[in-house]
Image (tube, one colour):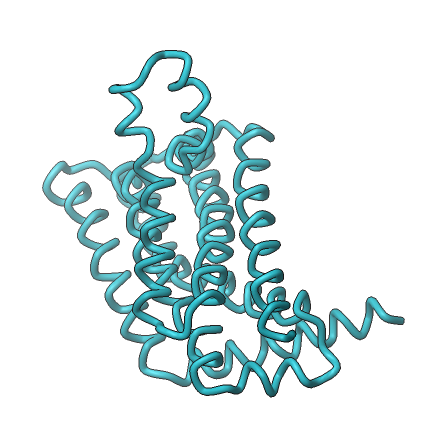
Length: 241
């Protein structure tokens, strides 16, 4: 019975967040900018390189999402903390976990919605070329796991400040470091490289986008999401005290 109540509370919070997001201009601004940027990546390859493939799109997708997912999440808790509505919410019979799960689900769905129009790129490739469907499907699967991890990071960043801009830059910094960390490993000793390379979100995503579904890569994204959601719950619990 308690589990059903928890699920219901999280669903209510998720629906409220989605309704607030999709009725605000920011949803269409972020979505429009994402489509413009991702469209440039795809059509540069399609027209200039004359290749019907999504390789360039998926190659730069982690960097793109490292910017756009924090833009989606920056207001979720920071704005409520600034306006005082979070304190009101926490006086209701809901737990910090339910609040965080509801916010996370809304962020994940909003992030996944960014990918929906890009399916037209896959359809275009299928019409004008013969791309391998396996890596293409795996690329979108990897993108969903990447969005989940970045959404958790974004929710955490917005839970520790009342300023949306600070929340955005904090989340962006964490996401871009996890994405680009592999570029800096060449300057380190080999033993340290093998250890730190595991923390590269880009490397794990690339493995999946190549059609290689390894449980270690999936576990990485699940672990990152779980870690930052746990930290977020602790941050919200402190606000409740």
